[in-house]
Image (cartoon, rainbow, N blue to C red; front, side):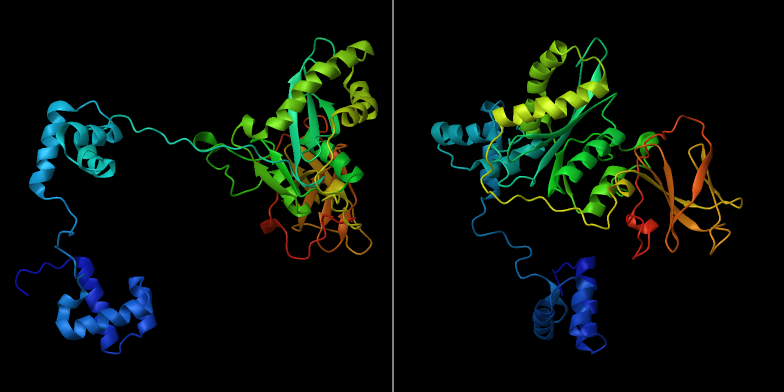
Length: 410
């Protein structure tokens, strides 16, 4: 057709529609090829039957919208702005043009016209509306787990790892540790889960023991595609993890830490407690019960959200460091310099080339689990470091275990 321009997209669309019309493709196949609905394909077919190849073009192509400003008017506005209003933002500019020049153009139209020419300056970031988050309705619905480094006793700095309930504001259990690491967090979780049950979710910061946040560089292989040991453990227990984007988002948990740094430090000094073990015992037996009685709130709903730990689940096999390994030719498995020797069973003498799961419990003991034979007898032969392994950024995912595995069971 004379005076009509067709794009490559038009040609592709016409070829597909023509194939549908010639019964070489079905309507559904044509719709899938063009990412359209079957109704649209039928409509285009009817247009092509009436207009030929021109039927694939949109009817409004090449037409100016009825409400569009004339080109001369746009040029006039740009000239006026360049001459007198260079330093105005678009909202202010729209107001001034109407007041001073009797030109009525809304700010979004001015933005489209003038932004490509360099007007408008810095793009102002829109602030998000923030509002106070209401406390959880039930106890056990949301927990905080956080570490607070401080000089709690004496002159040596240590870290208090504290778990707190959001609904009541009551601390549930605390532990003094050298630093906020995976072992300390697992130890606190084990106490809380044993005493109270499983919560609905944790509200956490983005510390490395909870989730992997590093990107690029030497850490490019570490991503959230593979869960951390903590994410793996909570996933097995059905505990949801929510990660805060700022300390302010977890304000209640942060304020509890500040209160502890004031009151608990004073009491530990009064009792002349100078060791982590003694401080942990005093805090959980005396300080936390009095704190809960003094500052604890009544939840909005009396029925708690705690879930009982299933009777067949051994938390020690879940709240631990887990590694997937293949048994070596000498019936050993090696993990970061640690060599664990497997012993024979009555029903099976060798496990060479077998896939096993190795768990490092919080007490430093190794436990090797086989899908069919359960826990295998073993001993540690060689250790390059005393009873601890560097934190693995990635936990064992479901890809390492088959459906029906009982590695978490007693």
